[in-house]
Length: 295
Image 1 (cartoon, rainbow, N blue to C red):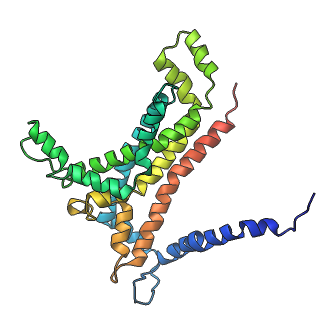
Image 2 (image 1 turned 180 degrees about the vertical axis):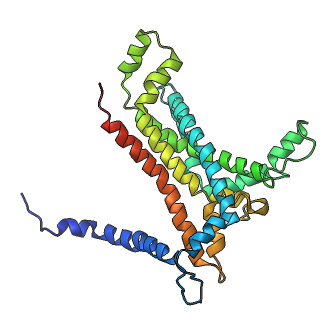
Image 3 (image 1 turned 90 degrees about the vertical axis):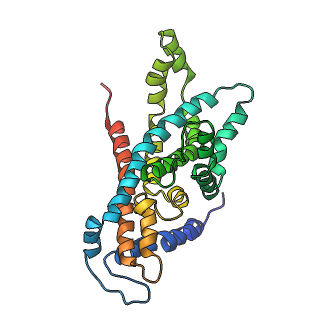
């Protein structure tokens, strides 16, 4: 058997390590350092200690952005955790033509988020297809301000996110359902369990790990939402900027020659900590599950 030099593995993983250090680790460290300064373009950097974080606690715009992201998390997590599971249960059946429906449900995932958001902005516009249809059917007398009202705009963005994410998480659940033994459902049926009881007592416990993973991924994505709100609001964050997400706020604060890079870096660090929380929660729940010893 041919032997390899001790440095062969390092040659293989070296490019990836360099890439991570240069384009991920160093930018993260630099962002943390900038958050303790008053860095601005074309100006000398001045250390300001915790001043940027103190400003963060009193910034009304950041508070609105945080509320927007939290509402996004609270609504999207249950919807995109349960609906894809139900969809996966439907399309896992081996019946003629089911491949067509699987492809149809997955199509929004591969579609460009920008293009889809532009189409939805056209649909929900005051003179868009939806308002014209509602007026034609006599349901409303005047157009509904879907993209002008704060909560309507947020609802449209959430609906777009849910519609686009259904197919992706459906595939995750399909993989998890493939590992569920059919004998469990057969045993439950012999005990007289109906469809709902089998779903509650067999399916959900079997895919619990996948549900935790999906919930964490959705929570992280919802905290980092950008494209949907940016396109639907034309980059303004809605009326008064109330629907601006944290990522949109980072762009607004840090862009341009007058941008405050130090404050934008502080917001970025805060966003990083907020996205770590769901991951820490799922790690804790998995650890708690493994440490439980059955009686």
